[in-house]
Length: 457
Image (cartoon, rainbow, N blue to C red; front, top):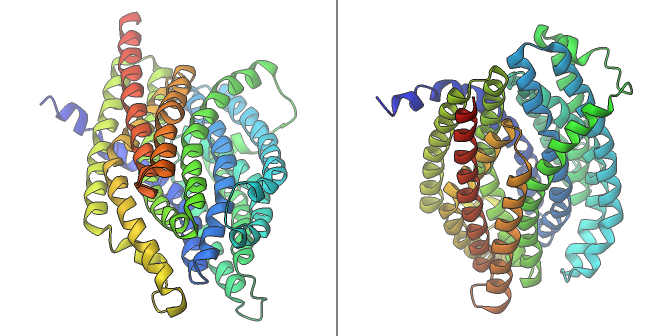
């Protein structure tokens, strides 16, 4: 009976989170397809895409993190039935995301030469430079898409961003095939071909989502006749007050995984390629957790708008329980198939690359064992973070994520990889430590805050 008050929410939580998960997996599938297709060219090409994407991950984390400020505000307005408040939240969020998308593109473009001073393999850097130029441009449509997506999620219309992402993935796969390998008379562009596919797919993705939302009764009035430059300072300030701490939270986490890519590069191109395989696979399961984090943000935001704080706490705990059970399933999956999964990324028929591929697969298999262990802490920290964003509590969680990842996780990763025999495994042991500290501290914060809201109501 006690457990049923949480499990009875599972069905609705899954229906709300599933489209978000599939949409987020779609973003990861773009990288997965790039990795698998480019991996056929060789380990240097795979490492180049990894290095180029490491810059993108940092910029994307800031843009996507900032855009999450739109969801709780729209969800709260939806709970209140306040159209004007919801449209204002979306319009100001869209404007800020456009500005941020352009700023992030310029930032990545200016930062590109840093690759030459990061102690990375020369052949990898030479391949990564032209790839990064085109992928950096795709940040602009991607961050604009995020504004529409977060708005759509805030209205509990989580299916439509998923549809747009599916269309984008089909475009990406087709264009990758044509331009990476030079099919149907197109030039054979290798890693640059992968960048063309990514850019084109992201432009189509934002256009298609806007079209869907403009046709739906619930969202139509929000996305048409947007007076984008008629802005209010108070709403801009509110969105920035929520958005920038949220961006920093995501930045601190993504940056430590990016640091793992760079540390792997110092160890060599094979450790870097192995790290990329393990990172790509664990990103898939992380997207499931992110989906439930968004579900937590939406539902907690709704309950906050309705001023039902006991329900807020009960619903949040039901999402924590469900996502943790799924994390255990993923952990078992990684433990059982850690030797098989890395081989999907490598061409074992290429005898010239056989020795490198064998070494990459062996390292990646060890990393997946550690990834299996941190499934639970990684899931819990991102889902609790979503619930806290739904409560519009962002400042203390930002401090928690900084402490967990950069005062605990990174020093352990750096020391174990550079000064002990753990090497690549040492990097991931540091990630495990950071994620676990983050999960514990964020859960304590949610527990304290939700009890306080009930007491004060």
